[in-house]
Image (cartoon, rainbow, N blue to C red; front, side, top):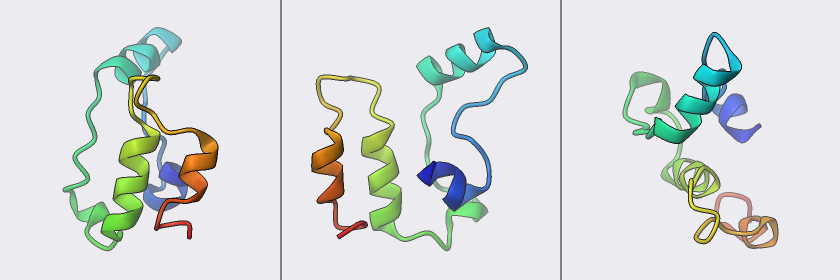
Length: 71
């Protein structure tokens, strides 16, 4: 939801479920386009760690609540 609120679009898009699943596996967000130029570095960092593909390194919801962007 944070990604959508900040960018106006979902982080992963596709015409079918399969395309969305593929985008989830393969998309790496760079946050360098014009739409991200007015977004704080803390907000972009928050999104980066929320969208970590590795569940072993992805922070818990509790840890995310302590992120500087939310604190």
